[in-house]
Length: 136
Image (cartoon, rainbow, N blue to C red):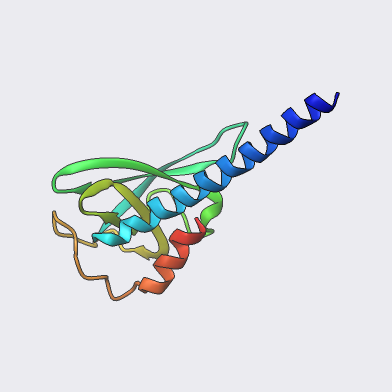
């Protein structure tokens, strides 16, 4: 009986350590987007719902003539709508590593260069972006 207790305790501690490491890795991975940031636009294409977990919005963006599809949790903002355009920030060395920035809905007429913008758009705030990435 005491042996089972030790095994369970050891398993619980290892599991907790794994969760902490995984959380730290994911947080750092998201913040690495800002190491080499490029700003461009994306469009939310659909809301996917699942019976087992929260829904998520799929969004599509293009960088250097390559299209990418990513997702963002439904609960990450109450300012997400299918068919609307938003800014995203991506890492120019790993453009698949990107995050939709739900702060500003862009007009459909918004144009963007094929290589995005290296300068942060005037409607965005770097501190707001960092906080969003840390808390996502």
